Length: 101
Image 1 (cartoon, rainbow, N blue to C red):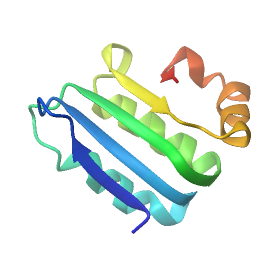
Image 2 (cartoon, helix red, strand yellow):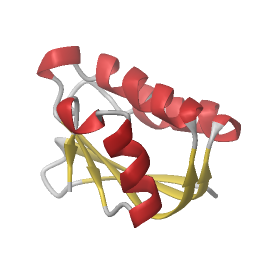
Image 3 (cartoon, rainbow, N blue to C red):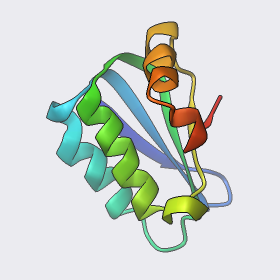
Image 4 (spheres, one colour):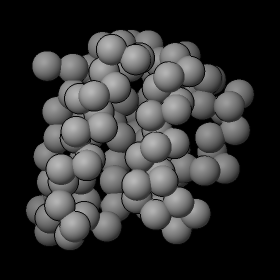
């Protein structure tokens, strides 16, 4: 399965793990991952350690997650990007909207 979720030990952080291609084909699974997470989630981590590709629709999905998480007050981190994915995020100025680690 290309998208897996798990909670942190305290239950307040939802970790969304992406495997393989992060593109429009994962749209519904990605949206379901955070929309059904529960009201007690206060921050999100998108783990891209297993992602091999990211396109413009994935950037849009990350923006939708940010809106869901509170917009400008959102606590969303993108972690473990490979060099190609990080380059796309940097070119798109996503470091201004997300914490990228």
